[in-house]
Length: 110
Image 1 (cartoon, rainbow, N blue to C red):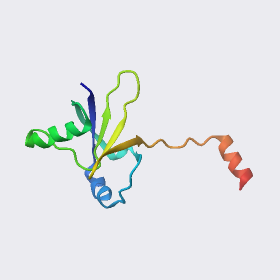
Image 2 (spheres, one colour; image 1 turned 180 degrees about the vertical axis):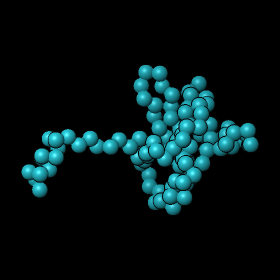
Image 3 (cartoon, one colour; image 1 turned 90 degrees about the vertical axis):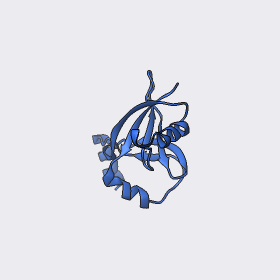
Image 4 (cartoon, rainbow, N blue to C red; image 1 turned 30 degrees about the horizontal axis):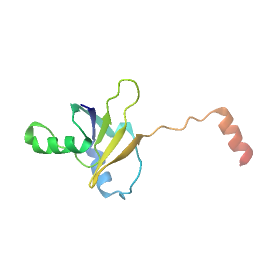
């Protein structure tokens, strides 16, 4: 059975997520906006969502903005963001590394 790592959207970011434009496609998310919420097993993200909804007070249900990450043994896990209409793929934000070459190329172009 697949294993999922839950990343909970921090409370500070929930209002921002709620009022942001909801577009389809790949969502880029920042690790600093999330806190680890544990690991669980379930057949699919949707079955996990339902299981947490039915668990009541024993488990906190998934909220819009929360992430599910597949736990893989030999590769990075895939991310899914919980939206109001289901799950969509997500990816961690990776800052662009600026090198001297990049900076000098920008200077030549500018």
